[in-house]
Length: 77
Image (cartoon, rainbow, N blue to C red):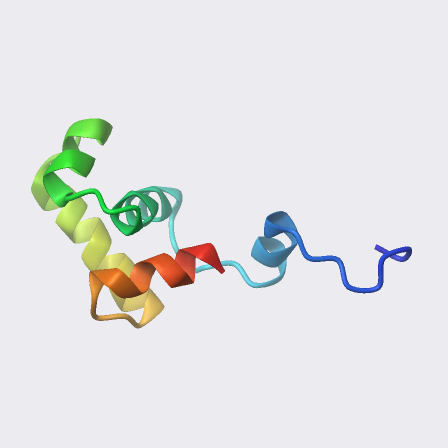
């Protein structure tokens, strides 16, 4: 880091400013942000649709977003 005045990698960004999500919330939000519907996320992760909905609700609350479309830009940062 001393040789590079402004290093910026995903790992450094996550370490400096981590999202307040659990690993499972992050996984589900990432899948949702990629366009998968709740039913497909549930099938892929062997969860109920209701569980996926709960994770998305809690993640949205933590991140302060109200629309599913707003999750993508936050995850990509």
